[in-house]
Length: 204
Image (cartoon, rainbow, N blue to C red; front, side):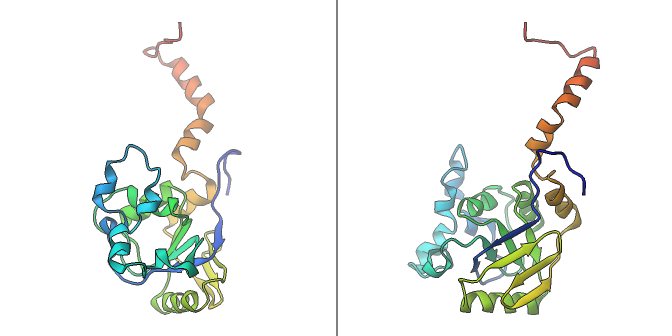
């Protein structure tokens, strides 16, 4: 798949995984609304699942020592539902997660993930259950989310994964990063602007 030289492609993500059970986990649980007032996304990772973690009193997967340093978050169905806040994937990314594997994802959440270069892979229920169990039993293992091959590999085996085709293409050719795409097109933009009679040069 062709791409511009300076665009970052996301072909696969490997690392330890964290298992987060439960369906219909919404964005308000991922990052409570009171943390949306920040001017930047810096520090949001500290507040990911803040209320759930407080209620669990240290017994939440994000506070579990066995899942420290996990890069892959394994979740249930309809993850990221609710409001469309971009802060949800931002918080999880800043917590250290670089990919998500689940039964299904809310469409807007998955779209926001794509804009950050975070793959969302969906598995059949039996394969997801096997992966969850495997990660719980052996959290030290490496899990690989392979966007190019459309697979997820763990000690439970290699299974077929589904990626929405548009986001998958963006991850593989680097066009997920809209800012980088714009910078790559700098010469073309300047050339087009120079031909437009209503564009003035304000540098003088």
